Image (cartoon, rainbow, N blue to C red; front, side, top):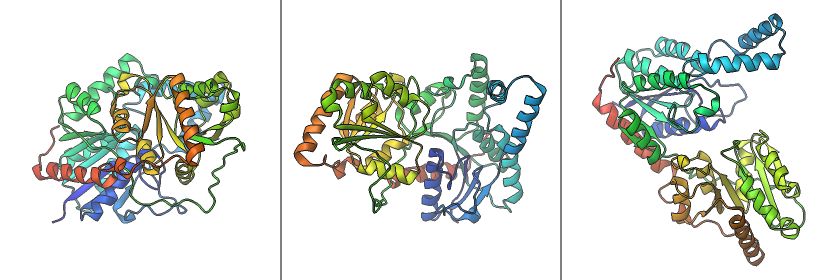
Length: 432
């Protein structure tokens, strides 16, 4: 009998959310390896959505309640009853929600997800459940279904929850963190094993919760991705710009800040700065614009805002250098952004700005995939080196193919399936 796997994930293709990638890739890979896979997700399938590459009849898509329209109606009623404007009402509700909703704003998916799966499974029972978060509410769904069906479950952490770097910025109080932390500890008592994306994060989970934690990174998509007939990706370049640096994805104030790079461009002086173009493609949350204004290098910067996944890839493939902005703090040592593997796939040199010690920094150095710098003068010197190299060669060389060895998606997913098979073989029912 084929091993049976239930994947629980809030985000799943055709969603372009980065959170949809890992479960989508695992689901497709497992089917290719003759696993019997079902997926439980909140992502809806729209008529105009492209194919997911995974059999749609094996996906249970459940919308959370209340629906968006009901939430909007509640906001309108609150607005009508108060003297506050809509933005103020939303701010008040958002602040209250961060403290009241346990464990997060996605908790309204838990009950309908559990009920729908149990109602529609038609006797199908998994050998193992894999659930991936964030959001953290998905772990509640997995724990409930695992207990009801008496099967083991695996908690996959793309980012850590209460002990992660990104917990505090959401405005939660210490009391709320205590509640969340106790809930997380209770949930993990029933999990068979945890999985996360790097050894430093795994060690945090082992030390904090005493749970067996394994490492399975994301990986590089081996499939070739051709460039469009036109390489125009929306850039507005001056004739003198000869070195293009591209950053795709989200920037965060105080953590993922491109200021060191833009300060380095300013240090080049007007003549050399004219030959450098820095392109940002991602949510325009003001971080890039503020850094540009502080550095005074608006003439060297193009901000495209959010772009499609296809356009993001085209930009990565045609840039001279890809910029990876990380937090310049030892606490970020275990962070491995999914974007890092996209950058490797493009095989363009990487400029990582952040702390010199950590998983990504070590991979970049040992794989000869680029440089790791945080000091504007050092970055300016590196820009001059790249400018001279491009003048001499016409194009910066691609990364060696050996830089990608062992980091392809199937290398990681093979390990994941082996782990899931190991857990399924135990048939250990979780505790209450």
